[in-house]
Length: 402
View 1 (tube, helix red, strand yellow):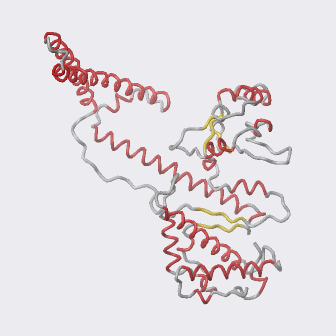
View 2 (cartoon, one colour; view 1 turned 45 degrees about the vertical axis):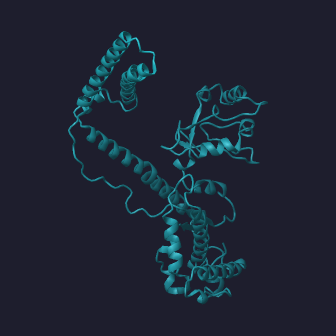
View 3 (cartoon, one colour; view 1 turned 90 degrees about the vertical axis):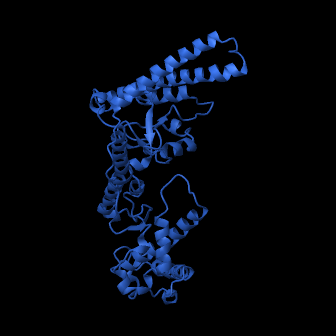
């Protein structure tokens, strides 16, 4: 997760290492507290991505067992933090992707200072986005200003109150006011008029709350003074432009930038400099210089079409079509196989593990799998894929084990 007090990662973890920090250095968790946290609550906090969910408050919104209630949890947290009352107000947690949307930082941390770090197969399902934000076209200004809308609301309020008084007075003089006819003639209009009047009062209160929030959160002293000359259409367009650009910023531009920074950190790490195999969801649609040396590696039309279909599946909390899951799974299988093959074949100098006896076996397995994948999707050159481990001439010098 990402904690929203200091803006860094907050990790729920289980480790045999007594020095392993649970939480983070700013807010370390005692092991007896971390051990009682439910996995469901941890996953819920990790799923709170901005704009869709509000922060998940730790420990107040977590469910604790009967033998370790919230009061005891807060007491233990306060005691372990030297009397700090920060835990009493709660630590707001959100999606860990805000800080590292690949999870790659966790792997780099886990394998740091190991003698023989593994190759990291980094899967990225973000589709290519040539246009992160589209500016809406011009629109008519309209004629009703917000000042005019305010005057219209007062007119509706006064009319509703006057109508309620008039209907009530008429009902009072009519002896048949309690009959069915009287209910329809007087009761329904009276309730309608009162409802409109109360609704206008409620709407005015809501607008007042919005103004107070703008003053407190955005430091806008008097929003009405600046907005009252706008027309209703201009206000709608203004909201559309600001919310749309904000969503593009948070969900696309920031995420893309964070992903680039994390990738850059991984590629700059000497231990993993030549041990990263990126698996992009659109890999099968891109050209590669390896195709000149290994033409059988080039995906055919069927595989490219599969990758394009998978790339078009939107990132969402659920799938709307039963076939989308199969498409993503098939594309993931093919793309991972392709990425590993490309990784092994690209290492012609054997920098990673020259002479590793497992390299030939891996290459044979990958090429056999690639042949079956190409055959499944109707690629005409499927039979040209080698299946005897001879995919990379020159033996172990041309590749390395993964």
